[in-house]
Length: 298
Image (tube, rainbow, N blue to C red; front, side):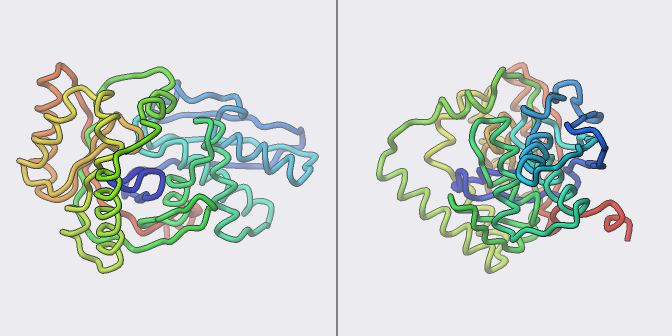
């Protein structure tokens, strides 16, 4: 999950229980074949040019001048188009699996750059925040040159409400809502919150981490995409959450801290007031990044 609080395009967090499973194998014939099952599988493109996993493999095949291709099976565990890092997870898994399959290694910075190409195929820009958390786990801070600082996040309860709304070209719309200029006061406030959040992660301070999830730059604009967002946020905070904001590019809303079940009920009721049902996820930060299936079974 990226765009975490004040860290637009910078902060991301790996979450327990939310992930994709990919199976990648070589085939004699050039090209890439993609099959998908799982959550909202019908919405995932099979064309490798616009599929985040396929785009990563296409780039590798061209870069290495491979004379063979790949078969890819994707099992979606992260609902796509909800701001939870679905495309980034698939891109990260594809990059990791293909390199393992080919017996190759890349420095972390180059691995992140490779996976970000999958995001570019989907959204038009090679965002590295989601893929960095998917690859490395934990709380990640990524810069424009693909350098990543990874920290073990504090132990906090996270509640995610995924409203049942749909937008065409959601990522494009979410970007178009953003202003080209921002007020200095708001920029300074976000910088302060981001600094506190990074410090909280480094110190393992769960309360400060949650209370620092405040976004005065992006949230006010993207809130328009989400039915009754301000009511949902207010309900989460009144139910005991310490912080609440938009997950990724939306429309999911996440809250940190408090009794997650009570917070979830409050958020769901607030969405219902707007005539919208939602799906709730109860999770916490994960220190684990991408890995092989046999490593999960150890």
